[in-house]
Length: 429
Image (cartoon, rainbow, N blue to C red; front, side, top):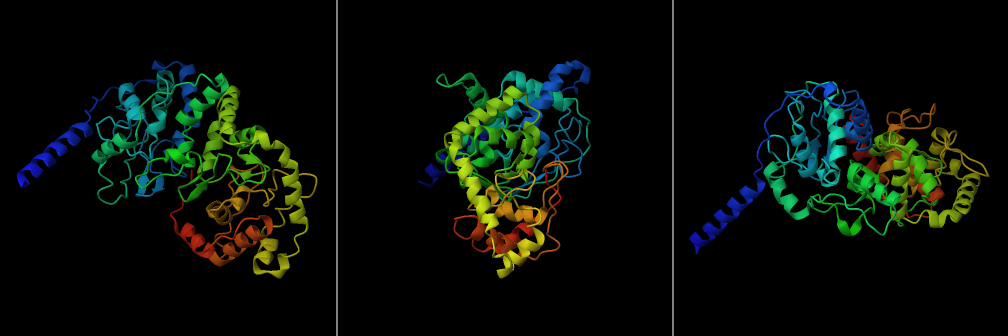
């Protein structure tokens, strides 16, 4: 019996080893910039921006594509790698074949498996032409000699060979297939959202093994200690995400009815701004179809009026500690009066961060503020991390939740502020 079990185990291990093994692809010469037409490099730049390559492979203040960006996952911290064309520490020795395999199969040039923090399970949908353009762009950037930062993953999750098992369970390497019942614009938007921009990677909850839960697609998820809101009809924003509002937000990072893109989302809007106008419209068409924004457009006026009435009627500010803090630090900028709100003075009764079940986004913004490059031109929201205690931030958040929404109160706010404050900073995108 024991020998039988040993034999079965040996066969199983052998089969898994065969599954996990991937051959290395030989090094190649770094292609000179002159080997790519300028138009292809320019197209690669637009695609790389919309795929957020620099956002994930660059640390704050660091050199582009040199890696080292820390991603907080359920399996501790994974650091992005150097994808600049440096031959020793980057991918300068990668042929296009090796680059294409990494994008579509999640396998590095040396045959090791990449962790799905790199969204190969979305990039596999890209066309050969688009991958070629991205390769041309990356290989014509300045090489940066910077060794990769080791990951901080507990045993056995850091074993790359085990990713073969993850792929067997959750990875479907099929290319994008257009849906005949949908319009050409919708299909183009689906290709961009599901492949290049990998929207569901952040907006879909993940299971215990880090896989996207297909039964809860786009229902909102925690990512990098922020919360990516639902893109479905379950989105809690008082004002619907219509096509017009989506277009403004995705291409400028500003929505007067929902707030300013910040945290991981900030680099998304900056990247999508580089897409051609018709691609931006296609993306909006697809994203809007996930929810019910346009069908609820007639509710916008009523929601705005309700929020403005709440702000005008707010007489609690000096009657509570949270109200006094809000009046002192926030109210001079965050006020609006009928008939509409100003995009540079977000009304917090409409702001998505105040409506979400998860207060992480609001806490981040109060602590860290809004950088000038992310917000409205010329307008900066200061961060209050140094001047306010955890309890101060919790009081303001609790006050806004109670006076600006009909949602239940958040729990353990001070504890959540402390946890977010304690996170390693200096690596924002």
